[in-house]
Length: 383
Ligand code: GLU
Image (cartoon, rainbow, N blue to C red):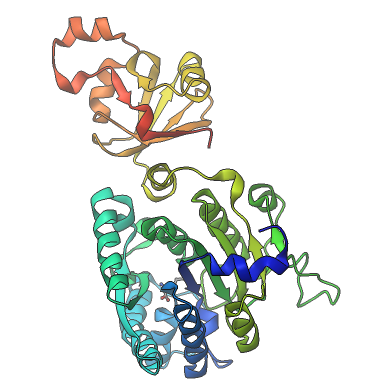
C-alpha cells in the first residue's frame, strides 16, 4: 500500500482476517458483559464476511464473564490460578452464547475452538487444529477461538490472547490481523494524560518501534496492554501479515474500518518475513533446552547457514528428547538460533566435540549417535 488513501483497495485484497477482541471491548463501564458490544463486533465481522472475506475471531472475556456470573465485582486480577480457571469455565459458555445469538441475526453459525499452548507447539496438533478450522470456514462457520483456560496453568499458557492470536495467523494462513481493544490505536504519548498526544497512523519498522516503546495502556481486566499488542504485531509481521490496532468500542470507527477507512494504527509487515514452517519453529514451538556451541559453529550456522554438527558442541543444558525445540547458544549465552534437536540431550552429551569419524569409531552405526544434531532446514538463525 503506497498511501493510506489506498486502504480501501488494500482491504479488498485481504481475504482471510483474524480479529482479536480484548476483554475490555466486551464489557460495559460496570465490568459486565455488554450485549451492545457483542452486537457491534458481530456487525463488524459480518460486514467483512459480506465482502466475501473469511473471518476468524479470537475472543477474550471468559474470565470477566465468569467473575460476573459468580457475583465477583473486583477489578483486581489478583486471583489464584484455579479461581481464574473456574471463572473461565463459567464465562466461556456465556461468551459463546452472546456471539452465537448476535451472529444468528445475520444467519451466521459459530463454533467454539479452545486451544492450549501445546496445541500450537506440537506440530501434529497444530496441523490438526488447522484442518478443523479450515473445515469450519469451508462450511461458512465463524470459528471463535480462546485459550483453553481451564487446563492451561501458568508455565504452559500463552502470555495473553494477543500472543495466541498472532500464532493463529500462521495456523490459518491469514492475510490480515485486526486487534480490537479499548484504545484507539498507538499514540506517541498517553492520550488520557496529554491533550496533544498524536495517533501513530503507520508503523513500518515494528522491531525498532518496540525497542523504544514504553507501555502506558495496561487495563485492569485483560492481561495485555500495548506492549503485547506491538509484540503480537511483530509476530504477525514475521509471518508477512499486517496488523491494524483499533478501537473495538467505537461503533463508528468499526463501521469506517469495514468500509475501508483506516482507523487506528497499521503495522506493515515487509522486512521480517520468514517462511511459515520457520515462523512456527521460532514463535510457536516451545523450547526445552539449550545447546552451547563454539565460535566455529557460530559462524557456520549464522554466517553460512549450515547444520549443527556434534563437533561444534561444547555443552548441553536441560533434559530433552529428540524432536524437541532447543536454543542454540554461543559461549556467552547469546542466542544463535532456534531449532529442532535430532537427538536426545543425553546422547548429544556423549558425542559433543567429536568429529563424524570419531563418532563412527566409538559408536559404530548407532543411529542415536548421529553427528548431525540440528538440520539447517529445522533451524532459524539470526533471531
Ligand atoms: N483467555 C482469557 C479470557 O477469556 C483472556 C486472556 C487475555 O486477556 O488475553 O478471559
